[in-house]
Image 1 (tube, rainbow, N blue to C red):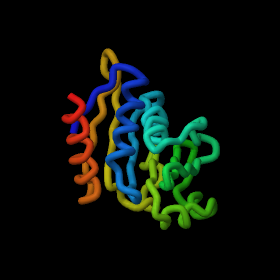
Image 2: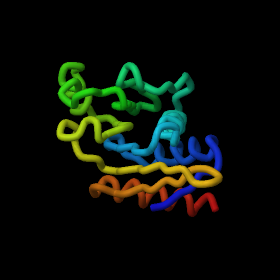
Image 3: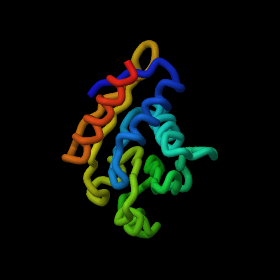
Image 4: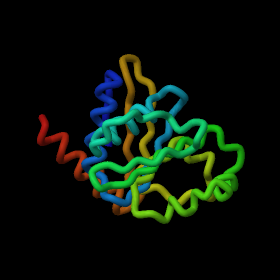
Amino acid sequence: MKLSAESELEQESIGAALAKAAPGACIIYLKGDLGAGKTTLARGFMRGLGHQGAVKSPTYTLVEPYESGGRRCFHFDLYRLADPDELEYLGVRDLLEDDAVLLIEWPERGAGWLPPADLLITISYVSDGRALLLEAMSAVGEKVIERLQSDIKSRN
């Protein structure tokens, strides 16, 4: 599924729609260059769950937990991860076993350690905004894309 966002607000809106389409347990990989808007999409996702507070990039903490609307979400940013084994020392394995949505930026840095994605979202620059490519990597991911497509059609 291909989507486009001409502004930060549109990208957050896509994130909010994604939150409504995702089940309570889902693993979403977010890929893209620095500044492409991975955290912007995650912010929209949290807003879509009903989170009212700040949504900051977990670049230094590696993970930020959120709970809103009876759902749990963990936002990971693995950009500064030197070795995937560091995730074990940080106690991340316990988080991966929770019934929660995992939004994982820079998943390639946790290769071999992270569970496979249900949905892969690749964000790239285009002349007047961003292009988002959503790829289902499991039956759960296929369901998310179906729900998202249905939501977008009903709004148009």
